[in-house]
Image 1 (cartoon, helix red, strand yellow):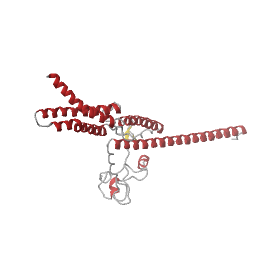
Image 2 (tube, helix red, strand yellow; image 1 turned 90 degrees about the horizontal axis):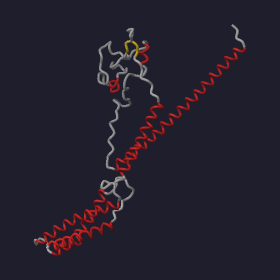
Image 3 (cartoon, one colour; image 1 turned 180 degrees about the vertical axis):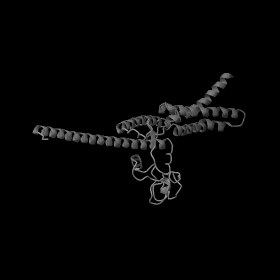
Image 4 (cartoon, helix red, strand yellow; image 1 turned 30 degrees about the vertical axis):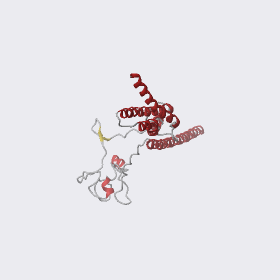
Length: 294
């Protein structure tokens, strides 16, 4: 059979086109793999940064990082952990029906799971089977014709889909992390109030509590338990100072956000003015009330 020049040229063109198509496919596959590796590296960096930020948030709110679980240690020095399942190559050898079968739990240096890794026969992940039964076989699915066929493998995972799912989860983690940061920047006491309004409320509350103590001292003075000098000293200096320092400590303990740069303002002059005016005013109000009732 002779081949004409035209047929030879057509075959050459076809081979050349297939060669170019193969090169283009290889280049596209290489570019796809590079993009997948770049996306995986980017997601790894994002997850690492998220982990560091979550650690900072945990330390800021007083939550200790949970201890890492114990790493699986080797049975003897220089040995690695047992392979979680059948050894590599066993599946192909059993499916093909040829090649040596692999016995489990033999203790003669062959693969015997965790028992082989620890060097103790009969102890490990695989139970010791009677002779003739300890052979590795694949699970089979019976066809309608009654012929045993190897079970089908699981469907291959698409890395593009998995990376997209991981990216969406990372975006969701970023959103929840931003919400946690916003919550961590609010104090536990009156979180929706401004710092000035919070300070006024705290100092006024402490001053009101001191005013109640003033009334108690006045009643005690009326029955002769407290003299006039002691009552005046507590009203003019003692109770206002107690109210001021009480408000100062409350703002420092519950008015400070978990995550804040520096120390939030406590408005000391304003607090001093409120406490040293509110307590004497409470005493004056009591005197006016008593006189009015008379």
